Image (tube, rainbow, N blue to C red; front, side):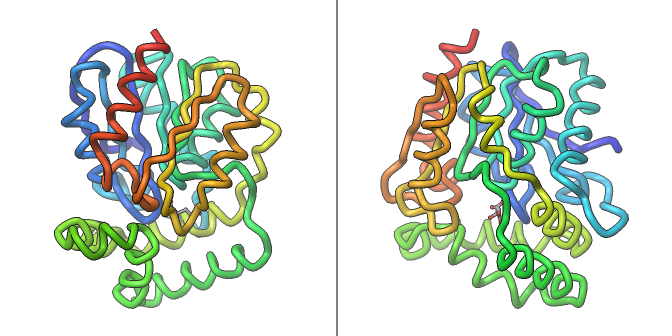
Length: 257
Ligand code: MLT
């Protein structure tokens, strides 16, 4: 599987992994704002954006991790800082587990290490079936409301439209296969204690999908983690507050090299 990606800058490779059901364009403020300090690579996960369509019924977080490893091998990159937002964070943790030698540092944004409960797993299947049944346009408005903070929704309508369009553009097969993949991801809390690379945990104070308390808990489990909570920002912290987000990553990268 040859993943599609955008790449800018030189130096420390920084792999940016988007959330669900998004694509690499989520990271445009980071491609613009971090290329002076890193070789920034924003990837489309299997099925999303311009990467090849996902086949089968499930794409696990481990499969996404293997796809990224293959992409980095193809680029001749042996070590990288891996940065994932939400589902991208689940993939980053899968990379940490499967390919620890590849990790120079990890940035976990608006994400969690715990697995889904039964109710969440049932909701994932409903989302999968509904999206395959042509229901994406119905799912999108409710999702956008949860992805962005109240302030962003009310005062930055162009951002809401940008996110809404991104969701609408993703194929139903990507929605379904990764939804099911998230449902079967394991609890990786125990892995957090074994992360002996520099780690940055970033979230937004108004994240309605992953409350900041979850990020705080995650950071306490990681031996060398720094926690940054960006005020008045929701689930898409990198997009809603690009300056604060890029500033935190900038500072973090200084400790990595
Ligand atoms: C995401 O933004 O990737 C999703 O909210 C993650 C999830 O549904 O668990």
